Length: 352
Image 1 (cartoon, rainbow, N blue to C red):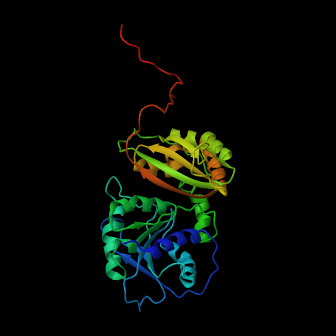
Image 2 (image 1 turned 60 degrees about the vertical axis):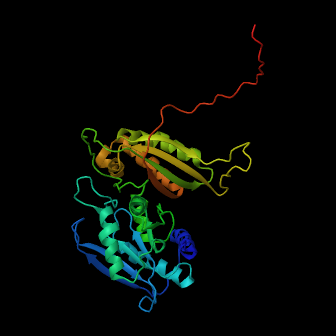
């Protein structure tokens, strides 16, 4: 059965997280803990935030796995603690246990060579550990997953693997003011989920290995950008970003803006306050996509990267929020075509 309060809370949390919230005296408890494991570098340190009244709670509370972005760690939860306290105080979020594990720049994935298995760790050992240690529910509708930037990617990656998770996933670009320490870092890190790169660094030539086998994936990235800026956003992508990513093996399918279709009765309407943009890109595998987040290591930092970086920074300045999903399937051959019927009439003649 759906839990309306949790659904409303998830939506509210998504909105409030990227807004500036006033600080208040914390009534919650922030705990540091660790878990030994053989699946990933051990021990895994994590932070757990317990709401006010946790000890007196008679029923199990919801559990929120709150995944940090690239370059972050468990301290992200401490920086976001005032936000949770404010929402709990305002009644905008129900009491729940919030947990952030330190996952380095793992992208929360199982490595192909088997050296680290973050997906497996989180959905098995870590989830079981939390359910045993804390007063949290084992129900699907009370087990939530929320990610920031790299954490958003991890949430999208992990959720399909286990039926016991309800996904609330937002990939934030750091344009808001909440969690300012993380946001300032993400201003440099994000650039579409890319790793941070120093503006001034020595030339880095790269020799590439042969093409690696893998199962192709397609990413569909959604952007909410400033109203009326799509032409500039598209131009920066076509001229600055796409050539570099084509060089490192990605294949851009295209970028499109949501429009109000003419002549379609009751058709969907484009938003009046901002433009919505979709970008579709093909990658040889999930590992390939992850490698392209470390752009300079994959393609060097020559003039083409400088042009790409400038274009990414321009796109970021126009972007309000973004998220990405991963898809597998098959590309159809050829493109679309329109063959309208001719305005002709026909008659059947009797045989001679």
